[in-house]
Length: 118
Ligand SMILES: [Zn+2]
Image 1 (cartoon, rainbow, N blue to C red):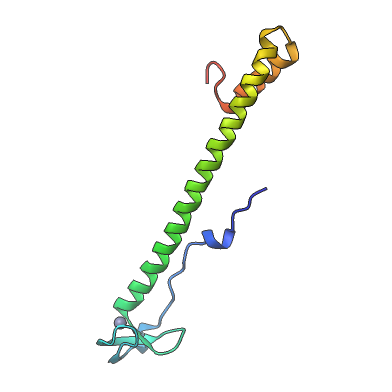
Image 2: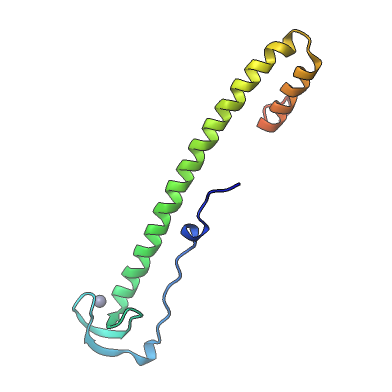
């Protein structure tokens, strides 16, 4: 079961603007005299501020993705450690001739991709 928040992984979508309706005025975001379009939150926004708004959203999404990737790598490393501990434990029984333990070791090796030939 995954505890990943799918919404947080969504790629931000750039807000669409009808630039044929642009008007010259002070941008409400940078206060520069520029061609502006209506912003969804109200006011007028220039092209430069549109770009900045979008790259900020992309950057935030990337930070979330990197953090989740790092967390996933950490979980994988922890789980690998648990699997290796279990393998070491069961290996002692396999070395004493326990066929079931031997089969279990080979299952762990296949699952971990450490079996011979892989
Ligand atoms: Zn602006």
